[in-house]
Length: 379
Ligand SMILES: *[C@@H]1O[C@H](CO)[C@@H](O)[C@H](O)[C@H]1NC(C)=O
Ligand SMILES: *[C@@H]1O[C@H](CO)[C@@H](O)[C@H](O)[C@H]1NC(C)=O
Ligand SMILES: *[C@@H]1O[C@H](CO)[C@@H](O)[C@H](O)[C@H]1NC(C)=O
Image (cartoon, rainbow, N blue to C red; front, side, top):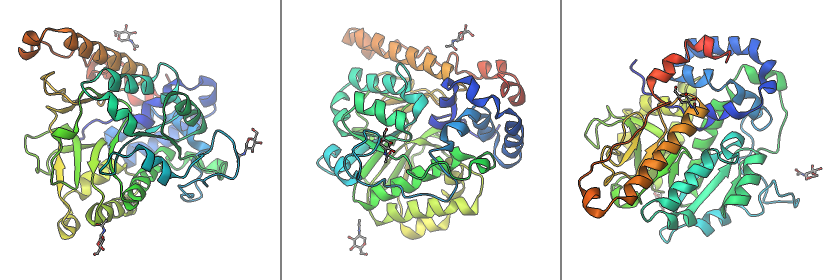
């Protein structure tokens, strides 16, 4: 398989939704799967197989009538499910002195108690000098339940829930709504850059164990973590993972995000990360002078390629993982491993005696146990 794995937020999140919701989707799922098979890579296929419930989740939030305004009005009503403040103010409140914010997106399933978001926040609290970074984290809620939970557990929440719901109810099966959501995220991030904010975008299934800022390249416009790192920061053969990147706000990065977003039309049916893999060698990028850098998995690891040395790790991503329960299981082990590392005396820490006990349930073996995609779609 030549495609790297990336199972992320939108995908396996759906596992926690009520079974009943999806019973009626199953027939259509077959069609959706077929669509996925013929049009997407095997990676995307697995994502879809595991994501069918997602379609129902996002049906109401992501109407197909084009992309609705991504800035819900700064509030004409006082409902707690809509933004009290405009995005600009939320970013300003959360930003570091150099106008950098940390952004993550959240949907209903990942927002549930004891789900991904709790592990994510916990990692900051037990990480090495990461708890202060929580002051700079803005959680972008993709549905109202996620927004409500965010307001309970975090200081900076922004609702990216569309007001225009329930359009084109029948059509949503034919268009992978989650792809739309992913693309909407790219468009949203472009707008953040246009407001003059640099950002670290992080999926919530990435554990923050150390402050990553000292590890970033100083001169890069766009730097991104990888499923597989070839050993060279500027090698386009690296397999970037869109779940973690650091982007400086400037004309080059803004142009790049516009180009990336518009490339969804050149490669219809593809995920933003696949399209990034297509366009990362495009002459346009050299033309605009964008400096792209790939981050070493030694510091920015994941289940695809773990950071071997606990003394070096900044973040660990639950990528290469199939299924929500597996993901939660392995993230829990990851946090335990980190706590164990912290409990070691300095001398033992230095010796790098520990290694991760993951992947366990996220391993490819467990993927095989799920059987063929068609079969697991009936799970
Ligand atoms: C606010 O909440 C009320 C009652 O829950 C609801 O009827 C109304 O439609 C909501 N307004 C918006 C804009 O969501
Ligand atoms: C973009 O370029 C214009 C002039 O070409 C300049 O005035 C502006 O400050 C630049 N914006 C950013 C964000 O660098
Ligand atoms: C993890 O894998 C083990 C062994 O296959 C299994 O018994 C257990 O139920 C799995 N746990 C979760 C949460 O999936």
